[in-house]
Image (tube, rainbow, N blue to C red):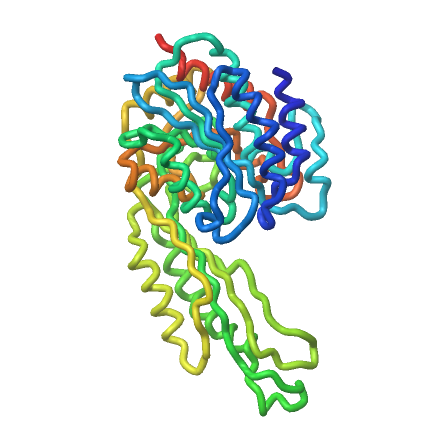
Length: 385
């Protein structure tokens, strides 16, 4: 398999979410490739009641069943974040790197999976193996994963190998999350008559001041779970960021509304209801501001994965790359909670993301060598001894 061409081809298909178009085109490209490495494949069209009424959500389920063996499911997603200011969907190869939106997060890991499976074509596997290629990870996909569960049975006690992870070590923990949109209401008037109105942007600033005071306390909370040294911190840490503000129509109009979007990340030791109450109490403490929560999205925390399979994968990583370890990730996703709390399984991760790959940023790239090494790790991990 010419994995570079495969990655270039799927990077070239713009699967940014929003809006989440072209998913079917990528699935149609990948389906015969998984079939060619010996997997039974099925396209799954997700009903809109499981997608928040978004259309065109088509996923791919792949099986190589080995009845009686431990259950293993590889997880991946084809959606990417939007890109501006560079030719993100015109991939290029330079100095052992492949550039393009999704190169590292996480289309490069899908290609590594295919490459690893190609090495095992016709050989017995150690696990009863499946792979899911999903959509909308970057915007929320819990309902979609729950819908896919029926096509993945058995899932009770399954191991789930997430390819949406960092390279060089086993990811054993993730952050929980609360995404909250808060609408502040005011009264719109001519700016020269501002005494007759109420400035929603200025009122929103009062809420943001209170949230930033809370942030100064939140970021002091540290987990017992270590993170990889390349992250620049020693342990997983809590986060509170105000990442989007939308308000105002024109410079001479007092705005009648302002929308604040915040992102709260929770270490495994934190409790989701308590963190949400802390946010709501902080907002409620600001007097004289008319606000309401427009949208809230929650990802609960789960304990770090501790299992002999993690130790086995760690040994294989070290054997291939000369490095290894077990660390927490400073990212979040719907998958860990569903796997651990609803399936009673174990979730862990290894992908092709490095800090310098600049995922979600300009000139995202993946190292060719990391794709090749991940393929070798997957091959060794699956091959029956």
